[in-house]
Amino acid sequence: MSEIVGILLAAGRGSRFGSDKLRHPLADGRPMAVVAAGNLLPACDRVIAVCRPDGEELARQLAACGCHTLAVADAVAGMGHSLAAAVRATPGAAGWLVVLADMPFIATATHRLVGDQLRAGASIVTVEHAGRRGHPVGFARAYFSQLVALTGDEGARRLLAAHADDVRRLAVNDPGVCRDVDTPADLVA
Image (cartoon, rainbow, N blue to C red; front, side, top):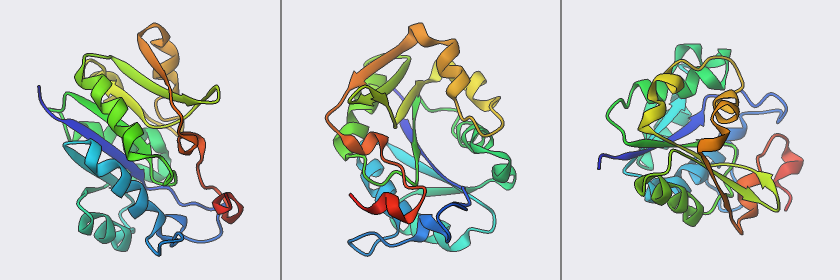
């Protein structure tokens, strides 16, 4: 089986945060996006971090921790563009784990669980904690053409809805799957 690629969506502006949230240091001093990448890297064969073209410093930090970086010119048009670009850049992958860089509290074990489900033949994998769907979301190679056609800011939400019968839902004991950081207050546990 070919590789499972992690896609770290790190091209957002983070306007509600008040500063560059993805470079904001967490308690251990590492930038938020670097922590998210560090949790994802052990679960995938490789990780593509999608960055804005003007995000050179973040791209350097993500490359230093082991990610391949991809600057996406139309990332400002929304998450769908970023996700499509990363999938397009990895056409030989057996599947993709999609993660938001502002979700640094997802456990590596959760990423591994989703990757293992894809390796075992699942088509689409989602995770839930306390009844709430979160991230990562896994997609098998069969969804390549639909993923590369994504646009806008919804990401793959419509794809999930259109293929609800193909989704393997995993209940996990990982509150990090639902904990994204939009404002500084979201960093307070």
